Amino acid sequence: MNRKGPAAFLGHVFACTALLIAMSCRRAPQRREWVVVQHSLTFGGLDYQYFLAAPASDGDHGLPVLFLVHGGGGNGIDFLQFWRGFARQNGIILLAPTFQFGAELEKQVPELFPALVEDAKKYSRIDPRRVYLFGYSAGGYSTFDAATLDSTYFAAGAVFAGIITPDYDWIVQQAYRKTPIAIYIGDHDQFFSLADARRTRDLLMANGFPVHYVEIAHQDHNYGAIPERINQDAWHFMSKFTLP
Picture 1 (cartoon, helix red, strand yellow):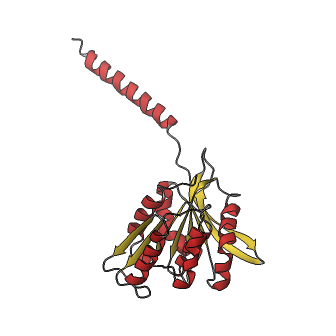
Picture 2 (cartoon, one colour):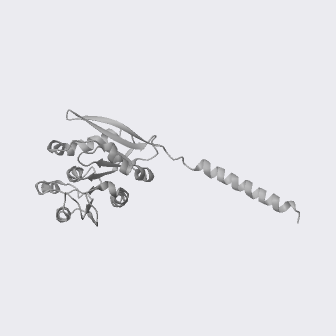
């Protein structure tokens, strides 16, 4: 055999391999940059600030959006940070408003929450069939409100450390569609008992809602202690559902 044979053959192989790699690299889509931008919506005479975490440029298809409702004393940008990495990895747009909780806000939820999403559509390409909710603590009240009173707008929802209080049981009767809802509660929650959470679960299930209910051992009210675990499980549940 000509001694140049193996070397020439390997050189040919390396050249072909390099060509294939170069071609595959050219074909591979570039990963889009994600940015967080603050926006404002005037609704009912009030200005609502919200943060939108989304690709810097739109792709070919709309992406799901997760509407985040922070807890009492919190704000949109801080709550968004708990989901930011997971959302980028999974192609989820995040919409995180800052609210002042109270009776007036709860009255506005059925119109305000969709209005915020519609405003966000001006800046990002959102799939209208995949709009989801995630609420924590005091934000859980509004999340249950939106999931039931806006049941044809939100595909599914999840709540950590939140319940439906008996004086709001009526909201489940108003739901045109039985929105799938995940509920997470720690067995050492300082504000809501397991009995409170189980009552909420039973109320929803008795009225035909698909419920994913999780009691977490040795966990208190602090969502910030285990966001990775909750986010992954909540998204696994919610993302199975889309609007018709």
